[in-house]
Length: 629
Image (cartoon, rainbow, N blue to C red; front, side, top):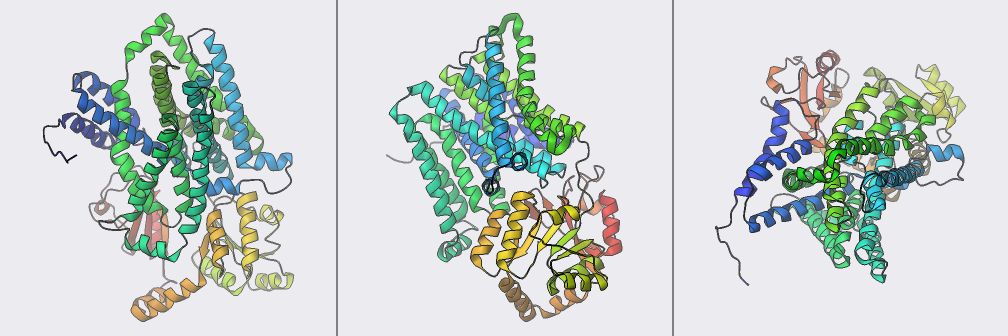
């Protein structure tokens, strides 16, 4: 065996596919159609080049494109698993005696019931549809209909400011549960269809055992100093050890899945995404940026383009004159499967939000296309049904967000305040500094004498127990509020943080603990933790290395501050940074776009949804807020 570096291989097909992958987002940006998922255009252009450009290419070149497409599909399933917050799902497990009220307020339990109802409606609809159209496998067809797209649900909720509130969390968990259950059921169903009920079916459970073992080891290894040191040391430049390790884990699960059976590959790549989701906390944005670059930058677009290349409209001939009726009924079914179970949310959020959530959950993209392609290969989905499902995926992933935004035109949260649990000296100083910057704050103090003392000193303080749910109803806690838990006891801080996360599903929580074990639990809950030792060391480091800068910043806080300002204006979108007349006393330090942070230069193009980190006076910050809105 030797390395063959022959340059006779035909790179032209890969050049064409790469050109589409590069040009599609650029085209959407130029035409200001950035809200349209790029995969829709990639599938359409894939069809065009498949029938007019790549027609007649040699078998070897096409096989290479198929290999890249399969790798893109594996990356897509991996990133779908990575998008799911496993810690959030675990935090939703019921820990108290279950009552009706606790049931309907629990995102995980409602998400499971939502999926079961969806599956019942899908199977009923598929069975009725099979009486008029040829559907080889009703059960598999119903599984296809219960899929959803976390990749579409998350960005829409983020854009509307709903991602952190109770309503958004209900939808996110329901979408995550739908993804997890769908993939598991697809794996077992395809295994049974191919091999029947044999002992080998139990091998799939071995994959789950590996997942549990990997989940356990990941939690242990990430805290070992040696691995943390080596990971940091080798994470940059040519080593990129974390990315290499991620690819190694993906390949490990994929190869194990292949040993079990081809039908388990989808499950294996999805499970390793779930494992890594539990490992990434502080470094999540950097890792996601790099992994998204590998996946969505190269492999995944090839998968969707090749879906378009293989799309065969002649398959619609199997329906004869009934094609239009089939497409209409299928589209209605796809919406009903998600819309009717969404009525579960009506009691908590009202009819309007339940209706909007049902339409958003109806968006489908990658998983439905992949499941249909697998069904076509197994012979349990006809070519005409496969072509119809591709069309439906395009329609739903475009129409669902539009319908959601039409029903809930403004989901932005307003009136943010800071709730400080504990009237300690730190809490009092924090409240005073927030008031100095014009930010509303409320202190919750359990001790009645201390609460009265703080109120007499002009602070907004209310007597109450932060470990009781009723106090948060009393102060009108909103999903956009920030809660600072600082009782003076690490154990109490953890108890209150759990109450806020598990019972109230609150996201914006800041707390502190001097115990590493407690900090680890808090991070698992999604609580931002303050390490007093680290803060003290950083302060002393600044006094040693940059004393003048540190004192200058500290003394200027009364006149200047840093604020995160969201770019809402569509008029400024696509504008160059140097074209915007910022206030003379405003300095843009950083820009956050998605999960990415970067320092702007004069040629940086701003985009709607960017978060600008601005340093300046109150007047300058207000001027910037007005310009960005």
